[in-house]
Image (cartoon, rainbow, N blue to C red; front, side):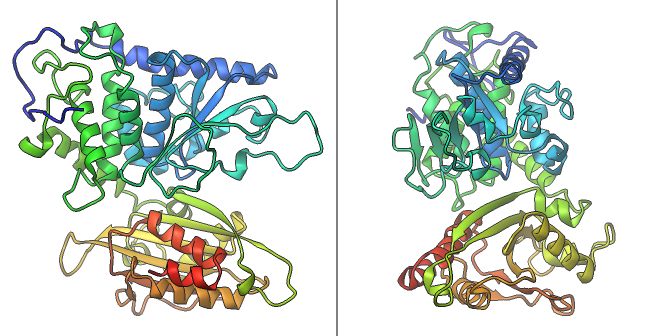
Length: 485
């Protein structure tokens, strides 16, 4: 793909341009999603499901997952003419407001009408008329974006029923560590060489776009609303394509392709050809409208100090099952699997513990940790804070890690605690430091065990922490040492 783009937001005319009839694109986009949703739900209510593919992002429900799933469904339906592909958000509808940045991006994509009701054009997990594990029994297959392992939520328990449909994952596009599953998936694109999954989704479908085709407003394969939604996901995940950050050449290439097709430019003055870039970020810099979009999304994302502690823990949460390594178990103990949760929270612990409303002193904070771990039946909870410094170098990005083992009894608990603490402290990727900011705030851990660190490497996200935890808990003694590197 050419990466020649002028960052100018205006220009001369051209023959093969992207036109747009006001309102038509948005209606076609949302109407297509709504039609898919209504047809899918009707089939499920009628006991059907054969032929449908559910595409979904990960359970954290961030903007990258949301945009990637919606784009995969829409473009598979319209561009590839593949029927019965429906996007599913693994977020209950009532929890959508916990991510205000998602709401902002959806509004830019004209998808916020009836957001809190079943009349909205996209499908939430609590809209399903059956349990998620029943989808397989109806013959439904899956496509995964922004993760590459189907969650247990969708896998039926072992059964002697010989007629049970196999679990089929037809497609995978992801930018996390590859778990080497579903080799028959097509496409199967798992690459850590992208800051955003939405970039990989964009580049995959771009290869199917007509080349330099003259288009009318009703036949543009990528509506401006969807282009803007994908751009929003890429920009927020890469910090606005920040130099030295998570952005890669793939992210830049995706942005260069999407930007001229988005609602951020005037299509009557900016000529664009499909499969041909007209913006070069490398040579001309990031357009001002993209910078503004990133600023608005990030500031909206951080506007969560009013949320309760349970809401803060829930808004960006992932859960893992880790079979515990035998070397961490007492001799003659039966194998066990630990349930581990990692919650990313966009405010620092000091602000969290000292905010006036809702007031969250240490005892209240600890009670919320206990309530949350009980709700999710966790043996281990990690809280990963990401925030701008309120003191010292104002505006400096910081991260903290809190590890909490709630009270309880299970084989090897003390050994695992020591292994996790020591393993995290050995990790060069995290570069953990003593948590000095909270001196005087911490008042003990009740019946549980906990510790807080400041991350020396503020660029290490959950994508770094999760694999380290996996190796510490599942790996043998040699693997544990390697995980810390």
